[in-house]
Length: 381
Image 1: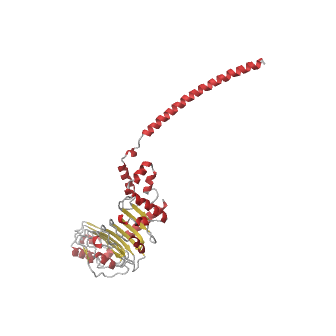
Image 2: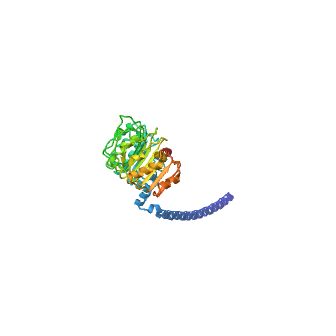
Image 3: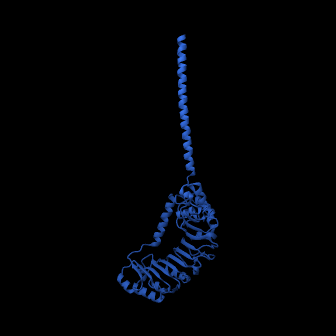
């Protein structure tokens, strides 16, 4: 019995020693833990006090940077994806507040591609609300659109730029005053003789681009006389003349004519007293002799054309046109030229900027393909 007591006393002394040893270790760990926590607090304090350089910028500067992140107005950004202004609202709280307070980020709306109608309607309504009361750029590409986006049409009084590729029947949805509209681009399909489109209350309209298959004079009524820039694509020369006779204030004009058969244009004449630049090309290989000579443009400085537009004698045609107009050309570019360049240079030695080439891609088609590619990439994002 005495032996067991001695053993227990020894075990107790050993246990107390071990407890003291563990307490010493715990005290050491506590001191180490305290130091680590103090170091953590100091580090966190420095991080909390640190300001990232971009976050020090004034809101006005950040807002301007955001605007430059987008395509140049009036070209619209994608509705979704990393190139959409919505992406800027997802970075941090401050950037979201700045983006939502910058109307210029939301003023260009492109309803293109294959985004579901309901989603486009919802996004366009949100974006328009964020623009406040400012001007808008609207781009709609849907030839079979049965109903225009209500949220967009309701604000047509704020439209500044309008780019439509739709059926003519859809145009009735946008009839009404557009006091801010300055640029109009229309590509229309499904034209019939009983279709009409009239814009009267557009006092700021200055630029029009028109692409209408099977165009007739009764289809389109615009305030032609107030335009300063006009582009007509795929119209027959006889359909262009009545329009050009009314556009007496034009400064820039581009004509990409649709001709199936060659025929001599015998009039009437078109006088454009303020015209400074003219681009004249053909979509097919049927020349229209006499069409250029029907122009009188005394202020013309730049002429871009194809040799086919100058048939049957390009140099004689140009000489007669320049003489009739009394203009002093500074730039003359002749594309699809098969003639002797030296003959042109000799005949028009007084023109400082002359060039010719054997090919000229279809600019209108290239632009359309580029837009389609843009629409497809937008949808994939």
